[in-house]
Amino acid sequence: MSKKRGLSVEEKRTRMMEIFFETKDVFQLKDLEKIAPKEKGITSMSVKEILQSLVDDAMVDSDRIGTSNYYWAFPSKALHGRKRKLETLQAQLEESNQKKKHLEQSVEKAKVGRQDTEERSKLAKELASLRQQREQLRVQLDKYKECDPEVVEEIRQANKVAKEAVNRWTDNIFSVKSWAKKKFGFEDSKIDKTFGIPEDFDYID
Image: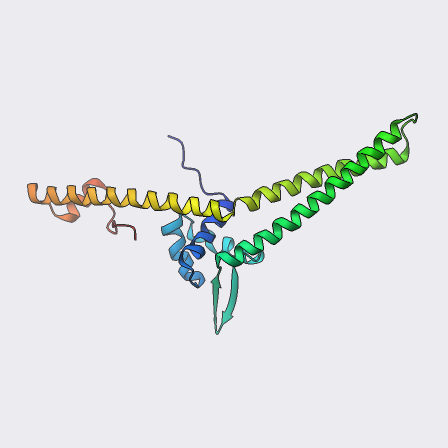
């Protein structure tokens, strides 16, 4: 049996943003360390690191009030922030494409009736560098597409369906336990121990 794959950093960041977008609430770190593992499958040990990365990227706001730090993020600001970032990246990509086109034209001209020159070698290196830069910008664009509000909404709906399914199974387990108690007179603790049911087993709110 293969091991269950852990969440990637980007998956954790996306799920952490879902907490803010779905609740539209303000949290302390200790609150998120309780909520994130239970509702989003993010380990409590990684909550602080993921939260700080979102603050560093200006996707989550934070403020210190008294001795406590508070964190919040609203969909409207996150959307505007992503749009600005995407526009900046797209402008940089367009600029790189223009430079690449110009350099390709220069290289083609340099080929006509000429041997390899220092200038041509320099242009070729700059062209290779710009191609690499363009690829890096494309990767960044793809990363921000994962935070698109439509994608987040799809994830939220999928989570809702999964939650309903889990609660249906939970209801079935409680029904079986009730039947076993009436049929055989078993106590709850004995049934839980026999079938490996945790003491805090309950519906997901």
